[in-house]
Length: 298
Image 1 (cartoon, rainbow, N blue to C red):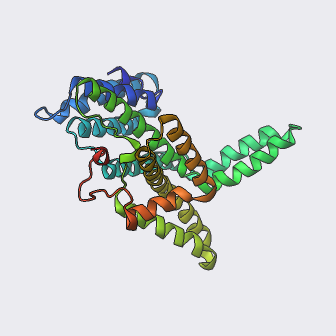
Image 2 (cartoon, rainbow, N blue to C red):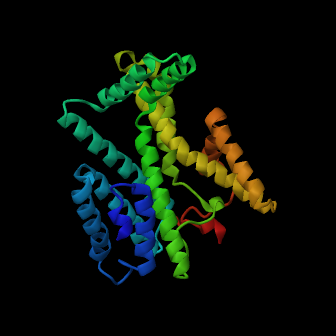
Image 3 (tube, rainbow, N blue to C red):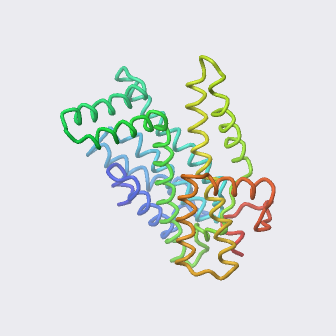
């Protein structure tokens, strides 16, 4: 309950503690009413939000939903990559919808709010003699205008990771299989390749779409960035699997993962590797008829 109560102030910390507590006590496990699970989250979370910051009410509900579903699936041993990815998409859209509604109620749109934030920082630095800071802000402003929807994706990833870590730690204490498997066991659903390819095509074709070119480029770039996260993790998982097969130590595997993340940002290598593994190669010879988190680890 404490984790849910602090969700209004720190959603990530709250989701970690709440998922740990629920899975540790087995609330909502098989044979028990699911209402107990969600009530134990929503009651203290909503009460704390009403008492301390009512503006956080919709965000608290979204956080509780994330924790509730991860805990539910974790207790039932039914967590899968597909479910987690779809939940992440839903959370991202819900956060964006809440912010869009708040902006609309104040007579703005989300892009208007982004421009206001950028303008405030620009005005703050306009009187400064720090040329480097002004240059960096100019570069950052262009990136923010182009990729601001990714803030919602990153926010959703933070909630999911914290919820998964908390649930996994609790299930270990209960002598059950943890929610989180090894990195080498990660296997994304094949349909992830569709938004990746469609977004890439849209971004490439955008300059030839006339009046819709800006919108197409915006949607294509953000869709590509979001799907790259999933496919990059697939590529890193493949590399980690081969590293384990060669008996590479944990430290070197960590360095390899960090190097691949850098390569993703600069060269898109892990995403391409993940896409090839998912659609054609199946480097780890996985049985993709089943979708459990640690199937490759067995």
